[in-house]
Structures are given as C-alpha cells and as structure tokens.
Image (cartoon, rainbow, N blue to C red):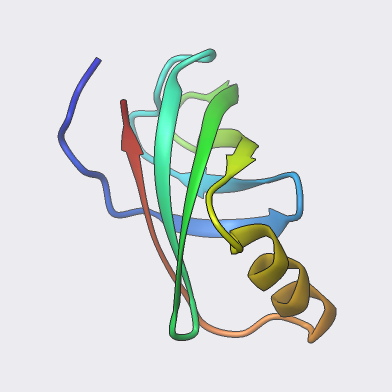
Length: 91
C-alpha cells in the first residue's frame, strides 16, 4: 500500500526468491515490485512477501520476471554469484 522505495540487503537468493533484512519487516502477503541489480543488469521482478520475522526480515517469492530477468538471474546463480544491489518496492 506504499510507493516509498526501500533499499535492502539480500542475505540469500535463488531462482524462486530471496530473503531481505529489515528491522521492521513487511506483512506476509504484501505485493512487491522489485528492482534487482545483477552486475550491470537491472531486473524488474514482481513478488510477494511469504515470511515475516520481526526484527530480522522477510522471505520474498518471485512471482513474475519482466523481460529477460529470469535468464540473467539464472546465469548469475550458475556462475556462483557476485555483487548485488537491490531495491524491493511495495506496490
């Protein structure tokens, strides 16, 4: 219910989702529009909060990749990972 962007640290990422650290986590079920930077690639992903751990963070499920984002994430994970910059945005 907010258009305010959050800049968050991802502690775990897979093809199906990620975990983000937040002192005040979002409610489970919240819909998200996520911008995930993988190297020079900007991935736009639709997701939702699936777990909520007060004072720790949220588990996020990726529900839809826009354009070729899924391919870029898959290649990143196969290469063993690297630097990420992320900004999940609630919609």
